[in-house]
Picture 1 (cartoon, rainbow, N blue to C red):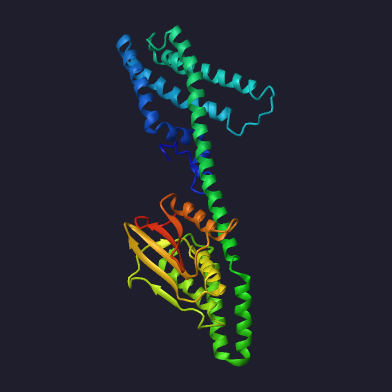
Picture 2 (spheres, rainbow, N blue to C red; picture 1 turned 60 degrees about the horizontal axis):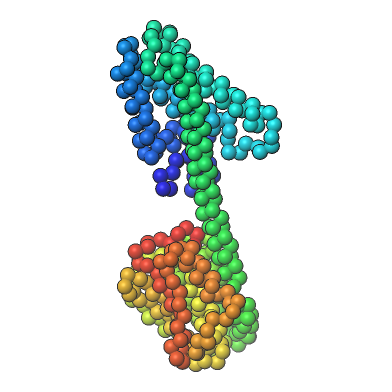
Length: 368
């Protein structure tokens, strides 16, 4: 995530187990190159100055230890005392008491590493352990800990929110799929069921076949709401089944032609992306009294997969407030960003709806 800090945010927006350790997540954040490089440069300069300007043996190692301890303890202390979820209610402990504890932690750490430890090891005054340098170190501890700790927490929160946005977008798309499941024209379903009821008296075998076909289609639709993507072949089979069901009451009203290569492109598409187009084509074509074949066409052109639904009847323009086409466009944006498109063309006595999908995308975005 653009050099994110890796603070243990899982893909579903939940905090991963490693994010529960402040020390571990802080260390992971500081190892990101855009933080590690400047910290190493600053610490390196201080260690070189400490070694060259100090006469005591071991001064360089002491300087390196001081830099390491400060870089780790300062941001961890700030993050522990001022977590992003800290209540905003103004009390002595929030924030003044915490600031006092943070200030004492900084001063104590500097005195422990920069004064008590050298005394214990018998190391005399050095460049970084003089009185004035220790005072500067305390200030650097306070300011550096605040800057690093706050930035790590902000990036952690940003990563969490981005993951949450993705999760919410996926949930919204699943809700759209559920809505799409109910988008099937109820008149179409009622007419199909009425036709099946009539055939039960006239031709039981046809009624049985129609019932099985309707059952398979509805089962496929339900299955599609649970999948982020499925094969192009399955999408075409669902579209063909839907058109065949429209022909149950009057098989002579229109024919269905499928123009597709024998070997379909090995590409997965958002489930039921053609369903609203097929419904519109049947509604404004044969069901509106226009005679002629309904065509499902698959072809490739210029690195794109073209899925076309063509019906008899002149295109009169998109209706204000129409949901079907707009729903398809939203799903394409969610699945492919700006790389896919839907257009509807007037072909004179016929109408063509066409979806263009990039062939170099093997899988649409999750839950599209």
